[in-house]
Image 1 (cartoon, one colour):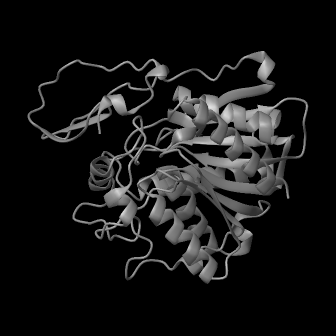
Image 2 (cartoon, helix red, strand yellow):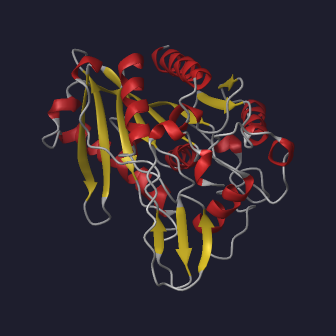
Image 3 (cartoon, one colour):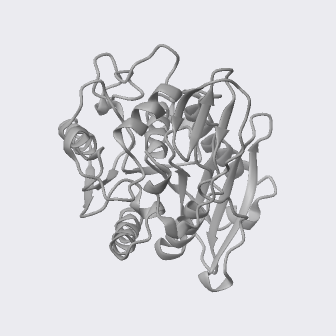
Length: 340
């Protein structure tokens, strides 16, 4: 994966500062380097931005702290002049290793989603690997949901958004690695007693191009031709998994490969209905389609949406006319899913 795989219209700036930490042992060019001594260098290929938004968008955005000791925070998006809104608890992508709720591409996409789909969004900034390998991101996702529960019970000074929120209409959502996190949080919730999350009601799960893998390659991993500025290559995918999974694990670990022997069965994903957004030219296409088929066989209500002619993370990392059209289509599908 090279630095040129992302859309140049994002005005990418790469930090070329050198460090003396020994040899580079893992690297995704333009995104992350891991050195022999354990030092991690993340290159600022996408700028981080403040929470401010153009007034004409009609959305208020603020950052809030969820857990100070672990530095978990989130960015809220609240459409103005509305009330009793569904809440999307959203997890950004980045292979568990890069990305931020403050990345400009997520800020723009989620503000647009909040405005057009008429929903509150809590975009969670979780801990990253390899400093915090899985299950750290899953733990942070669950902790964020428990924070929402606490706000529903007592407010905690966040009435500026909580008064507009319908806590009986919560959706777990994310793209790429964030969709993997949303799925894991849903599985954890399924193992909890019903009273554990009251007064919250989880109405569904939205998985956008979910990031999974496996030791055996699928046809799309072997043969798919990604668009020129795609965000994910097979080599980058493998590197992300080496950095994110527990030390010694391979890609058939259940967190990476839900279909692997010994993993949690898809039928235990108890948060239904489930929407899965698939990019036609994504190397993960076949894994995403296989997940949809397995969910359907397990009796789950699953809605599959295939976005034609676009690759992985097109909705945040590609500004082509086709990608913008497909992004608006995705937002329309999400709006219909959360309001039915």
